[in-house]
Image 1 (cartoon, rainbow, N blue to C red):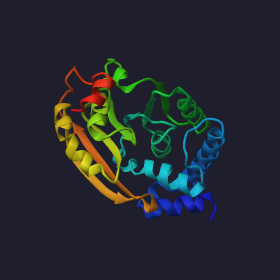
Image 2: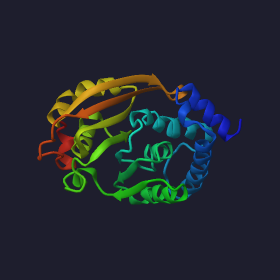
Image 3: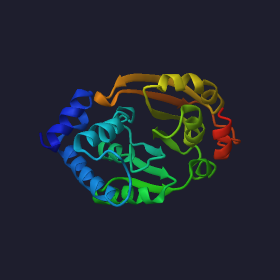
Image 4: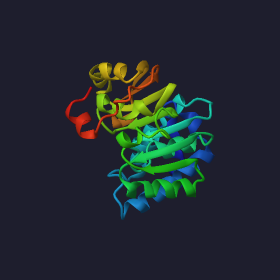
Length: 237
C-alpha cells in the first residue's frame, strides 16, 4: 500500500475515518516526509518507519480529535515534543488555535517549520510548564489542554490543570495503565479544581492499550499550584 492507503486504513480501523480524507492524508504524508528528514540530524523519535509513525504518532494523536468537537477552541499541548499531538490535531482542526509548549527548543523548531509548511494555526512556546502556568497570559486561559506521554497523571494534572479555564477541559492521552494512574490522581484532580467526566480504554492496533481521560475544570486552581518541578516530582499531590 502507498502512504494514503496505509493512513486511511489505519484510521478507519480505529473509528477515525472523518480525519482520513484525501486532503488530510496528503498533509500527513508531507508531515511524515519532513519528520524523517528532520530526524536524520535532530532526534525527534525512535519510530521512523511509515506504518509505525502513522499508527504510533499520527493515529495516536488523532484519538484526541473527537474531544475538540465543532467549536473553534484555544488549545494548549503541554510537553508536545516533536509536535504530537499538536500537529495532527491542527491538521484535523485548522479552525482552532494551538500553542505547543515544550522545554526543548530544538524540537519546537520542527513544530514551527511544519506549522509554516502546512499553514497550521500553531504557535510554539519554548518554556517549562510549571513556570508558564503562573503567568497571567497563560493561567486559566485555555479551552482545552492536551498532553501525551509526559508524566504520570498526578504530576501531569498539576502541570496542566492550571492552564485550563473554568468550564474548559484537560484531555490526557495515557498508555495501558491509565486507569491505574487515574486512581493515583483522584486527590490531585480534586485539589486542582478538576472533575473526571469521561474515560475511554481501547487498543491502538499492535501498539497496545490506550486510555483517554477527560477532566473538566470546575473551580479555579489554587494559586500555590503548580509548584516547582522538583517538588512536584518528589511529593506528587
